Image (cartoon, rainbow over all chains, first blue to last red; front, side):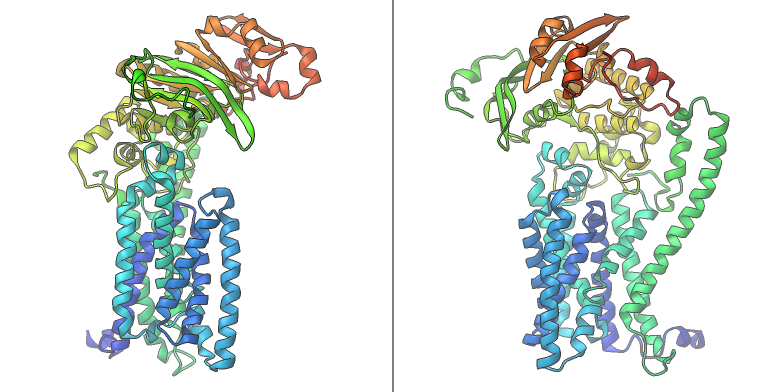
Length: 330
Length: 308
């Protein structure tokens, strides 16, 4: 047992304080990213989520310049971006991408400036890599309480707005006609998403934060039929991928190029992408089989194709195999 | 709201209105354009009323007024004789379409449950009462066998059923259905019409149902409200759907022909050749669409062009 484990988990992995902080921060951030990500995808705001990551890079780079904790840089800039987008009109579906794009451009331009100053004035060339691609193993212990507090805040917002958010993702008019304050709900969710993305940015980097927000959520949405199950599944996938990524990065010290190790952000993203592809592959394989059966049914009952579509068999092809929702209890 | 018509406290409140919903001299201007002018009609309890008009005639605007999503420039919307409160659960709403991705993890029963408490904060706790209510409502609209399917994966007619259950579960007195028959094949169209007639009768529910074609609604509507050019004409089918009334409403000559229980509304050929938009403004009620619809292989509704 000892021999195998020491092969999989390098001795010293769990004892290292760096690793402990990385596992804690990574796990918490990945879990909240998964939950918020499910709603971001449902509401069609993945692009805004990505934009927060890129824009928060300006805050992260600014924090390096001012020598303050990068978390506050990322967080501050991301929240400001959320405010700007809301003001410009992110709530209107038609203006959404434009508003996001404008704010995104401004943020990235500022990042370029700050990162340039970091390189030329402070000669901290590592800042660019750290801001854009993350440094989970370099997070200081003192940041942990702020990370946990921000993540808890974002989670509280999503839990509080759970039903209004779902209802308005079905239709803003439906939600408004039932007395949901659609605009306030959307704005508060946008702030929670901005905070979440800022957390993801310190974990796996500003640019890769999308992977943590959208990746586990997209995987979970393919596995389940219920919003609550999707959120829990996404959180679990995100945390598992982050922990596995940490382990791989730790082990990679002995991979080529020997004695250098692979970036932890790459390892995490690789696990997320592979899990997505695995689930998607398994699902389309099942769908192919199911539609093959449905197709032969259709041919035999060609007179009334609607009847087939309306019967349970029709939905079986779409939904019948969601393993996580096998029970229909509420 | 103007002062000369707004008198919400004293005289108005005690005056009992025979209407569940009353639009009283409504005018609406949106971005410098007059959308509705002096619109007045009422719906009594348990009445099924068809709101008929072409795309852009103002049907959705009227719905938004009743739902309180839009304030009229002039006039009043009264519900049970009272000015419409900001949040009113006595009105249920089924929008024309819901934008649900087939991938969206929301089952029919989840959407119906949101009709019960979707405006509340916090995560819903599992409750037997809630679940029974949802099951009962799914059964009432005949949606039991796709209760656990993703709403986005359902057909248009099935989504309509689920949305009707979503709207009905909070026990409204008035149900608004925005173009529920749009994009439905003939069979689903008929099913939805039958369902509406049944729930209206069973639950004593008043229904305002919009459509661009009156014919599929003929078996269920007690009265019709025609909308064109920002004006309305309301009354029974016999009163409203006449050459005189519609000619006045549309502002050009319109023929009304009753044929085998269906009603054909057509502009005179000369006019429609002169002004292309005329066809749009009355592309509603047509009789010959039926055969075309019936024979289309995929069962989708064929374009209802005006027979002239």
